[in-house]
View 1 (cartoon, rainbow, N blue to C red):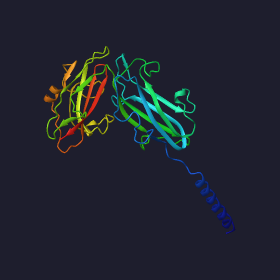
View 2: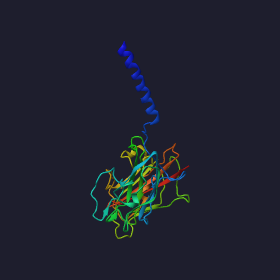
View 3: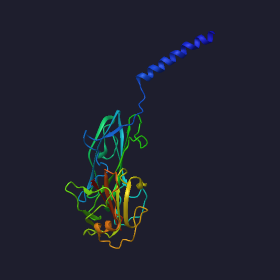
View 4: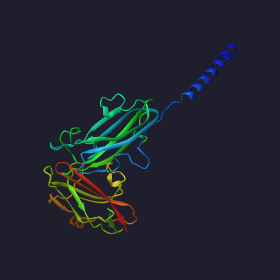
Length: 307
């Protein structure tokens, strides 16, 4: 009994000290927050963003905040053409593939951020594919690219895909030598269609007069709700109708032989391969995916006004 009465107070004192320590120094388990620079704006690039053929760089803008302070920010950009495979490219083109780490000890002055800052703004960070600061040596392959932004705080907590705290999306780089899509649209930029009827299209896809342009290889049209922005391999989940011709350089997709590889008439194609607007749908888009023989991709998504 004497030993037990001696042990009990020490045990209680230990509990009190532990409790006090926890309350004064709570454990931080939350990852940093990645958001836009200002309310009402979007992180750049935003989902589905099109980079004009005349642009020579991508502008990246976002904010990272954390009460414990931001330690590092990782910026990762890579091709999203085919679900991260490594198909062989023409020697004339290369994919954009970069990893940049923002930190207080970065050797590149453009990547230096204050150590332990609670809010870090990345404004107008340039990723160039032409000029002295180009991230590619040759010509940039046109098409879809993935961007991932992740961050670590001073306590070692990291953003992740598992809890959705990373920023990850797909954007599209257009180049003057990739297939050119021209389509008649309404003044609001949409297509008009009626539920239960075939979609009418007037337009064409053609090879440009740029010296790096190559013949058309694959054309893919689909009616979709665009839930996955081509990031998922199982595209049929969001596709309600589709038609294709030629064989894809990037995906396991193929249709009838593409015999006309310079100018492709969309009106004639959909008359022979109709895309019917299903009943009960209120929000659809037509996604046009065009590839050339060098692997360049032009992708355009056009909202449909259904009546």
